[in-house]
Image (cartoon, rainbow, N blue to C red; front, side, top):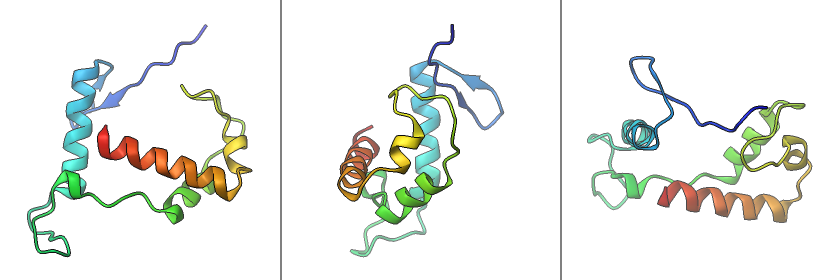
Length: 105
């Protein structure tokens, strides 16, 4: 029987399953994406993680479109086929949830 185990790979290629290590790896990755000191927000402030742009509907739809079929379900237990046929209302709710998770961790 398989269990659902999250694994993160660090910059050195080492795999980690410990929650504290995964949080550090994730924070480093997000900082690399959005913490560039040369990047300025529209208001002129330096970009910080809390100012990271939200996931857009276009990005979500691209990910859904490119998701492979007939894959094992994840921790949420939702098959990708269900998400692929979701209507606009469900996608909006999913997008809201994903952005909340993204912003709050």
